Image (cartoon, rainbow, N blue to C red; front, side, top):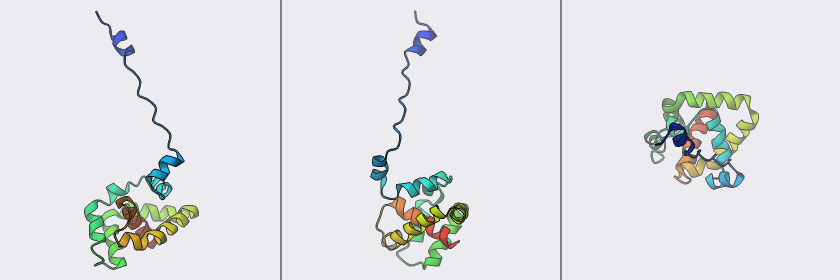
Length: 130
């Protein structure tokens, strides 16, 4: 016969997840720290700016910069506002955002870079302009 005690004692605990290392972050890309900072604000770019909105914003360069920012604000206005507010009070974060936007601007508009970086570019560019 079996007992609950025997059954429960035979269950192996889940292993602890490995801590994020510099190597793991590097594999995620050069902008992993900025992505993590935005996630730390409670903003998940993939959720607040879904693929259709991102495609509309990058519609083959048909939209002006202001038009692109409007698409982002209409879709992810709360997230843009939150990022903009934090960037005003955290100068280190603001500097990182400004560097990222300056670095990624042309590449993102040309369709270069991964979707995660292009999506983050749209959100951060709109936040800086807010």
